[in-house]
Amino acid sequence: MSAARPLSALRTIAVITAVPLLLTACGYGSDSTDDDKRPAVAAGAKKLSADEVKIGYFPNLTHATALVGVQEGLFQKELGGTTIKASTFNAGPSEIEALNAGSIDIGWIGPSPAINGYTKSKGKSLRIISGSASGGVKLVVNPKKIKSLKDVKGKKIATPQFGNTQDVAFLNWASEQGWKVDAQSGKGDVSVVRTDNKITPDAYKSGSIDGAWVPEPTASKLVAEGGKVLLDESDLWPDKKFVITNIIVSQKFLKEHPDVVEAVLRGSVKTNEWINTNPDKAKAAANSALEKLSGKALPANVIDPAWKSIAFLDDPLASTLGTEAEHAVKAGLLDKPDLKGIYDLAPLDKVLEAEGKDKVDDAGLGAE
Image (cartoon, rainbow, N blue to C red; front, side, top):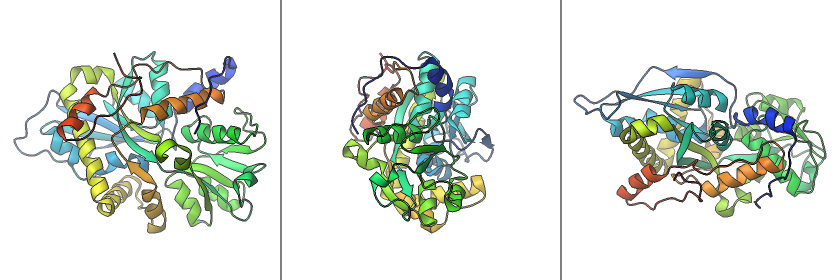
């Protein structure tokens, strides 16, 4: 995907309206849920510098590192006598608010809310300390109405929410086709219909949309309803990789409890390794965690293709975060941000080095 050129001037109203909404990234709503069933702490295990660490994540497959790591006790093993308290969120704003309020210390979250949480606080609220997942986003269409990419023009395509990560990606892709779309209204050569992921499958079945640019498992749910994958967003990126989930931490918590942050990162690295070594077991563990959180497991015809399209990794793919921010600027949804200092990858590099793995790059956006 080619890097976008920042706009020299943006409509003030677009910036004011869009920045809060960009926080929603991959979210489905604004509620959060505390998980009081904490993993058991081994008898006699030594506490770190904090009695507990509060983590947050979405009940989504793109957050499977957290789902599986908590489910299998891999984080708790690294934390010793420091207990882990998990909360789940359905949208970026509530998770950022929880981080700023101290209700959580560490969170799994998409690129847009990470960018906006950082810029709105003038670089004081959070740091990105690791990657977690790449991919898992597709353009799924009604094959009776859309048979090729050029057929998307003039059709109604859903994205999860105004200004969210997939909304920005679709607007950028449409622009690269030479199509004009007003980002605010969604009207133009293609109609962008902002639709909650929970109801997108029903909207597809009713015919009110012709397709959708959505994350997993929504994409595979549409395929199960007869949709066809017309484009995998991974194909638009170098090496087919782009950040979909990061790990963020409160700067205050990072400063006061670096040993706890390092332990969580060890748990994340080891969880990703376990996921990649045992994909079927990991998929089952993620689905079991989702069932506990939502009351319903995903059927095989949804979770199997969805799982295959997501890559779990430690690299935050920092250069792609910068490109995604440029796309939001190009669309008129974000004023040009200063992302210098958004990353602090030193704790992750320490963990990776101890595990015999390569260090990762912050693309020049690291903390001083």
